[in-house]
Image 1 (cartoon, helix red, strand yellow):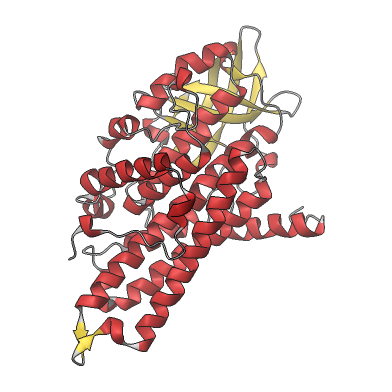
Image 2: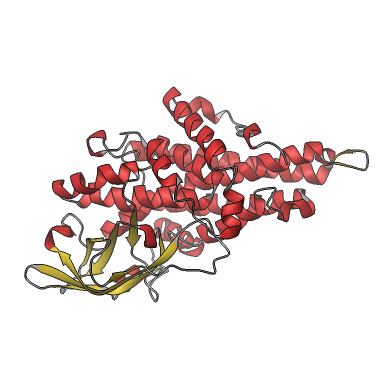
Length: 393
């Protein structure tokens, strides 16, 4: 097995020239941390379906939680390209690790910062930024995934508190979360956001087992049985689907960057192997069909790099649209999944072992291509954008 510290980031179009020195310093710091704290044991954790909880505080220390949140609330005040770079390096380690950080940042810290009160921001954001608190995001329900507007989770105004009933499913961080950003309908059928805290009577978080994907990640349910939620836990700035969908746009943006890290990891490991492995008297990298795989892989990685860099610039300027994010998420996840499969074939039988990362990335990406908007729904979002006609209603 080649050394994990020998990783070379592919950059065929000199995309690094488009990054600032700060971007490169951030990438180097997170990359070194992944090499040191994730790569040596992630295969064993994946095999045993164990999430590395010990890394949560370390993720806070390296600034992986809420990097674009202002410093006064515990974030680093970085730009969106920095956020993307951090997600890329984390997913090079494992999609489950990136998912944890992505949820904490885009689906928990972002809505509290964007829609919360001053008191809510100061209570939750600094502790979420350090990893002293963990958050999760409750939107998807057992019978409502791509159509969140049909959710049945509801809450009633009981005078001095709200009474919440319902359930959410496929929730990253569910069983370890200290606070859940839960989206539910009020008595007027308006979707609102509630901060449901761990320990509230009637709030349970059963864990989901038997996953063949994202095994080094915690997935579970959120169940609300007459949960009394204090009125001060309502997010006042969010009404309707705009609130949760804006969170998903931020998370999808992070995914579009993140999966490039998985593709890079597979590409780099396969290229090193192909240059060392000999058959018929020469390295297998010398054969035409292997070179075809590598040439196509580096082409797709390069296209993905340019796509997210431009999207990052647009996000920094406040011009990036949800439809543009959908295009990048859909394209880049498919790209990464295809590269994981092709690079696995370069290694032959060795590619299915835990000595190499391809099968783990491949299985993880089978979830990533579905969550935060399925592959097909993102296609229809682009179709809606270019025709003005909705195909999913």
